[in-house]
Amino acid sequence: MQGWTGVFLNIDLTKSKAVPEQYDESLALNFLGGRGFAAKILWDRLKEGTEPLSPDNKLIFAAGPLTGIGLPNSGKLVVASKSPLTGGYGDGNIGTLAAVHMRKAGYDALIIEGKAQTPVIIHIKDKTTDFLDAKEYWGTSAFETEQQLRKKYSRTAGIVSIGQAGENLVKFATVVSQEGRAGGRPGMGAVMGSKNLKAIVIEGTLPIPLANPDDMKKLAADGYKEVLAKPLYAFWKRQGTMSTVEWSQENSVLPTFNYRQGVFNKAEGIGGFTMEKMKVSNRGCPQCNMTCGNVVKDSEGKDSELDYENVVMLGSNIGLGNLAQVATLNRLADEFGFDSISLGNVLGFAMEASEKRLIPEKIVWGDFEGIKTLINDIAYRRGLGAVLAEGVRAASATIGKGSGDWAMHVKGLEVTAYDCHTAPAMALAYGTSSIGAHHKDAWVITWEIKAGRESYDAGKVDYLIQSQLIRGGLFEALGVCRFPYNSLGFGLDWYQKYLKAATGVEFSLERLNEVSDRILNLVRAFWIREYGAKWSRDLDVPPMRWFKEPLTEGPLKGSTLDLEKYNTMLSAYYEKRGWDERGIPKKSTLAKLGLLDEAKQLDAYVKLGE
Ligand code: PTT
Ligand code: SF4
Image (tube, rainbow, N blue to C red; front, side):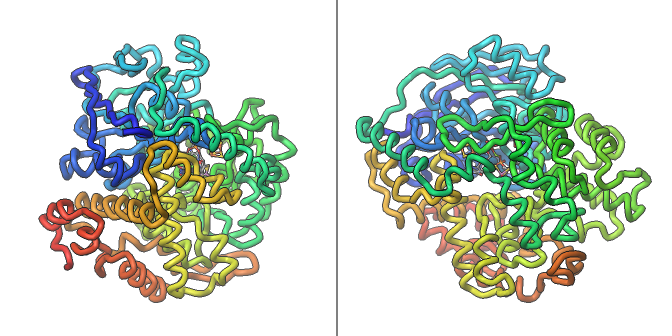
């Protein structure tokens, strides 16, 4: 095998044991890597019904065949597990030197199970794995942990860690790296904490086997040049994703006061141009020349790395219009190791519950000091913080009183930073995403607004599916960042050429589409298996707020989604995917993708349509 190292490292924390495993080439050819590996490993090796925070759950760090090779934006790693937040398939995509080092240590994935008796750090140096005492780090932030570990190891070692949120099993805790990159929204940090695993340090020095190293060297250099030459490059370097704040405001899709208004009267204060005036530097993932992390000084004079999602969820969605203060909340999210999107979402929910007097606590929109206190309470699970630490779905079940309609989640994962009162295809993207309400599989909203936001027609479904196959399938499996492709127009043909040079295998676009479809169907099958009798198509419907409560402000005030039309669109989506009316893949669909064994297994849980 070339391109892939062909080896997984199985790590059992209960036994402090690490065993390499040569995996079969067919796995690489059929599932590519990243999310593809994670889905297949969880399907094959995780016992159905496993409690996500039990030692039996598996935490997977999976690379793709292009990870770490030194081509544009290739320092990415999928971190996956059965999610404690949603109970289904969960993953995230983190930019980290650990991605590069893991591949250089000779591994395509780490599969971690068991639970250490006391806190540990896994240290991997090429073929050697050690388990080190982490007691002195337990209780410290992800930043502090990484700073200390860098002193002990090297400035350029690959390090991922958790903060206090992961240690205290906050259900939306993430894994953090390089003081500003975080991945695994559906609670991958909590799974790491449940295993008493504080950090992983990887130092790899071995070559990654390539089918054609000379071709790859040239293609990689050409790729970087092509990225630099893209017309949108200069503005991207200035703002990264931050210009989306102004765009969302102009188009009434900016989450504001828990997704009620679509516009925010202080949007300018948290927008891309305000950020530019505060910016001190760019930061980013390894092997990237687009470095999209905008570093600003926060209200306490500390560095904070801003993206659109973080700023909006910890800004307009909670009524805060001061970017330096938003940056402080964002830094706290990274230090504690919360997912910033879910954090902003549960805070907005708590503020609305307080405003409606459904809870005794007084949590006021935009009250910076009060919000900081509540964030600390969530990290340490104190009082209301303990309720919110379970995520918005569970919090609304605790609070009740109709709050389920405005608990903004899909399948338990909090909605990201787009208000969909007036965007049916984006609502469907959230409804059918692989991990719950995330835009990563399909960010169709800018296209939809150009194409006509009021329509629910089948063309939108086709566009959505294609987007899911490319973003949620291909990019999550290749092990590279998708931003060159979707933000600068770096063509898919580059990745075909990279795959050829790395693996020696010719992948046509049709073949890649089929791999993606296979991965996304297996992820779907995993959800159905884990939910069993609790599965229903209602799980693919976004929050009722967007259907029942019109937008309250802005030019589109009064708009809602139409539930009947949404359901028609959802049925069309199912049909095009080869799924039945319940949203369950048909036997023939799985068989066509080479998943007949999986179909037979799934059939034992729910009767599959033919
Ligand atoms: C991603 C999600 C996003 S989506 C953002 S901002 W975005 C939030 N970032 C967080 C953060 O920062 N700190 C924190 N404590 N929590 C955060 N939660 C949120 O996590 C991120 C970039 C971004 S920035 C995006 S869109 C792209 N996502 C990619 C993806 O999903 N796949 C892929 N192949 N390439 C991608 N490239 C881009 O990567 P999750 P990162 Mg991320 C600080 O983690 O779980 O996938 O959720 O990992 O290294 O920070 O890169 O406007
Ligand atoms: Fe990381 Fe941004 Fe570069 Fe993508 S564009 S690799 S998210 S720094």
